[in-house]
Length: 288
Image (cartoon, rainbow, N blue to C red):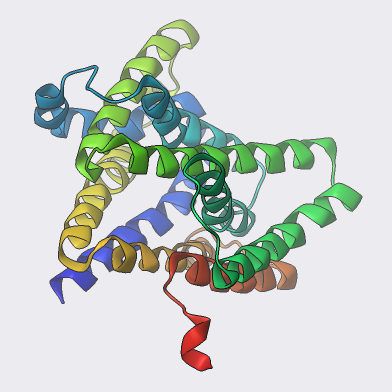
């Protein structure tokens, strides 16, 4: 029961991260500042972890570079996409397509076999993504096309982290500690040049975003997920990720008043089923 609770806790927090990020964007917080809030807190709290590993651990540099795809670039790309995209669109384009891109990457880089069931799940995810992308291609503006590109790049970065993490030999907390450290240093350097928007926030708003981005999403969810993997195993813990897109859309409806369209609901439904199949949460062989 503890493992199930920890998995659900991580999933609920990560689902809430999307509407929380949308709220921050609407309040004028810049993507660079959001990335700093997201990673500075875990970088500090996980300092004993990265200090023990060393700033440059015995991990192939290409793996460390790929793992940064889930670091500051991921948050920046999602934040830029959310400047005009709805949470439902973002949920269909990022959490849903990430397992598809990761599976293809694992096939190309690690030589992993893609069985018939996973292939079917990947096809469903592709249909879900098409439901979002095709209307934009035919009837959307140039800004909408740019938004879709940013979200696909974010999903690709997350997938790169997933593949590289399995190759790195690091634990989940070790990988999070290093990515948080590197992202924080990178964002501090960037903000020193561009300036920060955080000064325009009131203390209450700043405290909320620090909590939502850094404390909950950056640290608590990561720790809960790592502990859930220890109790349930990686496959079982990862299967709960299928809930992220749907929960994010539900949270955005009640929190931000975003009403998903019929095509959005269909894309989320098909994409979630695809994610469930790809991650192993749903096995079609059980129904035969």
